[in-house]
Image 1 (cartoon, chains in turn yellow, blue):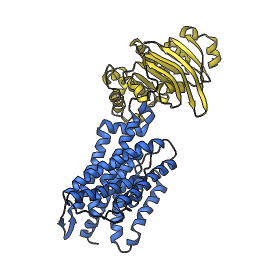
Image 2 (tube, helix red, strand yellow):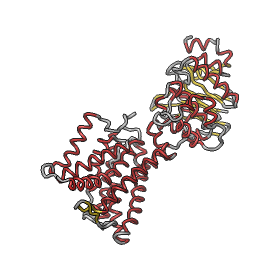
Image 3 (cartoon, one colour):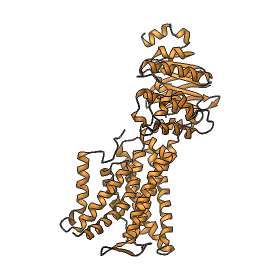
Image 4 (tube, each protein chain N blue to C red):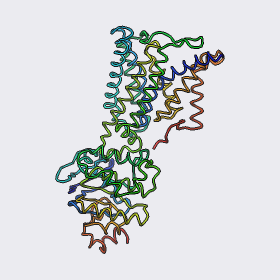
Length: 231
Length: 292
């Protein structure tokens, strides 16, 4: 389970995230929805420990990670899939997966074999440089790299951005599968249709603050969805 | 110039290239991973050269050199670690000018300390591999051939470390995206210290290896730093292959430039003419990657 309490993020004198508090139970998915610039990416990066200006508490499975640097939080079960399908472009596909596996160590429920089964295309590209992959292939690799850390909690920042509809569909299916394995997921998305299809709850963000948290079924036709996302 | 003379001067150029490559490889490795231009790199080279001479002579010329070399590389690496923790951690992510000033300040402190500890006189150490090899009517110093072989072995070692070890894979990943590497579970802070220590140890190795072939004085830091920068600019900062090619070019230009009477006064100038030409035609150097 992911628990975030009173997350505040400041860049120099600018206060950009205000008292963000959520809980995501095991096997559940919380969608964080908001317009561009609402603070979704900053919230996720604040939880990962990558922002020095972030304060508040973060715990995974009851273990308090507040004050831990990012690499320690990852080893403690927190996986981050950044936007833009970021991967190590000068490393091969195989090396991208190895780096996560070696860094996190410990229990190996996710292996390269399982990643190849999940994304068969990646296995045929395993000796290719990540920089030469298509956007969809890089997104698969980014997800595979995060899974190789055997996470208990996954933080995904717009994983469907710029992808073809068929790939968006498969990512939605994958998220459903991950939930069934007990992984807690926090998904920041602009594509509310995909997010609400797999989410259990949705938190609506405006100017760095949560304005409402609703069950996904209610969020789909809510007033706040229309107001915040303009749909 | 006869073929025998060409071979003689080419071997001289290779011997120059050998120690310059070792030093430039360290500079380049640090820049590639940390994006910091280390102005104190020459100072670590100088300290190692002095330590090698002093310890080597105390242990006994010849075999004592190897003991001196071990201590010198360890000292350079340890000072590098201290500099990284105390200075560089405060300037990562800042503009290059701040980093240059920070490491330049370190180089001034080290230069002053070296003068206090070792004095201003030049020091020498007897070659641990004496003798010559005769070929085609010319004699080649055995130690020069050792320097060339050592540089090839060290270059191969650095390549193997970068492409055949977990540490090397992490270093290459840090070059691409240190933030993502951190979020993948790698302690990037510790990795940076390790890289800087390796870079400093390479500077030390260069200084130690060159000690038996040159007089060691308190100005060799700037001499080598200027050449190592030229090599890195020509080959491309951040590229080990570029360091090797750059060192070959600089070593050969100096060797042949000095022996041809017409070019003797301008031998060093040619290095910087080539550097300027590379900067104009290919600003990132022959093998350099664009800065992300």
